[in-house]
Length: 492
Ligand SMILES: [Zn+2]
Image (cartoon, protein in one colour):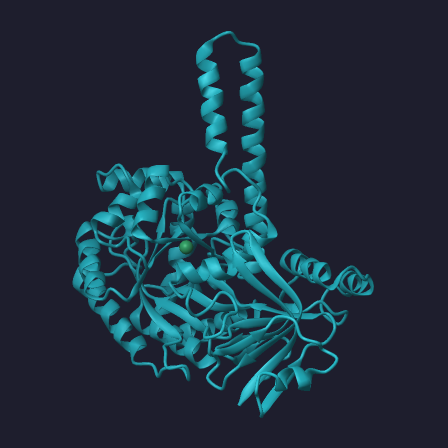
């Protein structure tokens, strides 16, 4: 039966725009795909408005005042096996953090009962955070990662699930013993996930993903084999880390005798349209061009980049170079599994970069004023030229942040034809958000409800306040492929 949602809708359009539609109808067919959208209806007579579309039988979901619908959030980078470490380890940087906290925690997943218990909680919590599509890293363990995929499937989330490939620079207790073992476990997992039944829309909801942890955790032999495997399965996505931390970049270039981190993945045929690269904090512009040329996507994980003292990814510059960008929580480098938090930190990071750039420019100009040396003028010009990009060194606004968390994430996952915004034919992956008094933080929301600006600007305010002040308590329904799978109103 068709389900019709009636009420305010937020629909991302581009990196700089979204639609705020106070009186919208979205019709969803029994397979969970969007049939049609009516952007502005007379909501005093809904049956008549619906009858105009020729729909006879339907279920009507009419939103209450203070509720709105928006596309589900996409988390392009998260480690399911690191949740037991949430909020631990912010004193260290990446490589020490891995050996001190992370490898010991991940090694526990050889115990399948433990894996089952933790992964059940993890997936429920990620769904409750409003993440409808999620790119999960498991541990190195094949069977435990199969359990993770099972749980994701059972819960109805759209996801990518991969097991880490690691046979180099790892402790004895947490390492794959050979290239053969690593490849065969990867192929087993891919086949296992591919055997899952299709969704009602006749497509897989859970996808396998080839997951070399990062360059220095894989010998050149293993990267070469993974490249061959990827080449033989062009439709299978690849996820890995890149240029997260300066010491990691130095070590990587040294171990591979290379001058470009992105170039290493490219050499091993692992940089392509469906590669998801996490972080990219220290990428050079030349690397950005290579990534854009290959069509790979970048997962911006600002919470993690602050927490592990890594730095700030130049998201604006990446966008100017034409790189696809989405957001990632990167648990447990990131201490918060919600993409709302990633949105907030992405905003802070972009403001910091803008402030730094502005003050650099002011210093540059001031020095120029007090100097007769003509080369300074070239330096100022160079600096100003660099600043002229569309997004580089500028604050990311609400429309851009919303885009990164939805449509941008969909592009990074190569799912832009299915999710990320509302269009006829796309899957209905959505959140029903509430800013009503009974949601968290009531005094703030109810105050807003009583004010009466125009409906459209009110909806824009609700969105911004949800992105910056909201949490799980404001998410009443989490919907994937038309089916409610979580949220405050969800009953299993
Ligand atoms: Zn990570």
